[in-house]
Length: 240
Image (cartoon, rainbow, N blue to C red; front, side, top):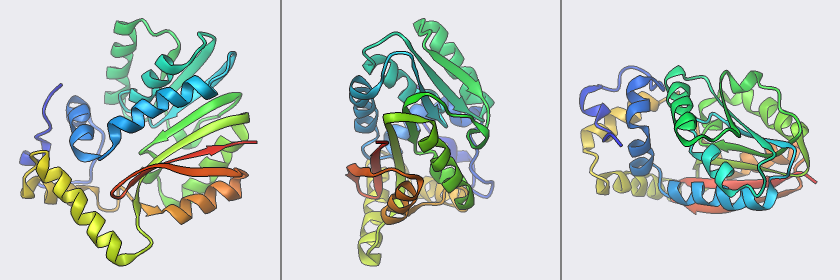
């Protein structure tokens, strides 16, 4: 795993993009930048053991290097499932194809494509792991609706996101705690500042209440935040 030193060189003036340089250091970037990321991936495997059904599909939307896809594959108690891993980054999909081939994991199907155009059908589990936040806000409702309609009854959506707290004072505290987390993981103040600039207007967080409202409007009736670490949450929603 290569160390993430991207923003020692990048000055943050160019918008963040999932290019070859990011793909090369992405596992280290996630580990050091997102509190609770490892727990989220572990839980996706546990949830797959409960929710993935034979002769269905699973979707990893905005899959990057496929951590959630492999977690679903490892957790699923059936070989009769297609795990469709979709990302619009050629660098990410190229590396995922190599990883799938190396592990002989025939259930995972890497797809280069845009999740906003993806047809979802016959799904028992769908994962949006820190993906929705990179779509424009006006695209989010349609995607969540399409996911709901593509899930079988009893199917599960896992939605992990960076969020804004409802309380402004708590938001300021959680913001500072997240930056302290990065410092403790050996990012410099300059790297933190540059990455924040690069992500501005690229990663657009919302409040948990906004995510809940969107999920409810799509038809989900069973919704819960199962994990929160500072200003990062993971939500599960079940179609009934």
